[in-house]
Length: 134
Figure 1: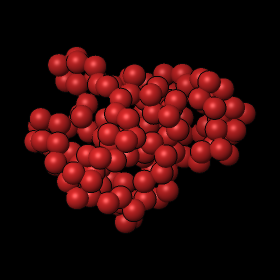
Figure 2: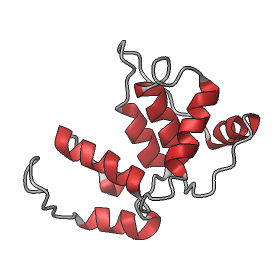
Figure 3: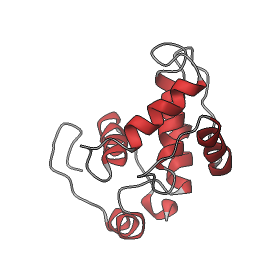
Figure 4: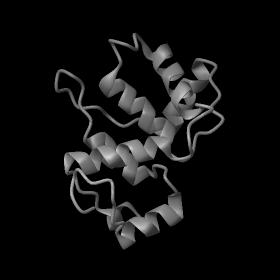
């Protein structure tokens, strides 16, 4: 990227390779990296959620995701925990509904969640080791 305020991006070769393998979605390493940068309002670190646990939570609340790809749902779950749980999202059941709303948003473009994450990292000046994420 040229600078943090520019909308013009120079895409590194390793990022191109990541995108060719995973599209604009979170693989496990990228998800773990993303969550490593998440904190709750009180400064408490957010933990990752395993795919099996995540899937079981969705089933527990009767939620079926139509457009979940790789670790996108896990990312949204963790992001919701960091930013909304206990305030706008009162409990885990509503957290699961929040995930459903974002993942299955009918007017969202493919990769919207990943794009937002990437934009945040760029604007915060947080480098991504694309080679490691492969």
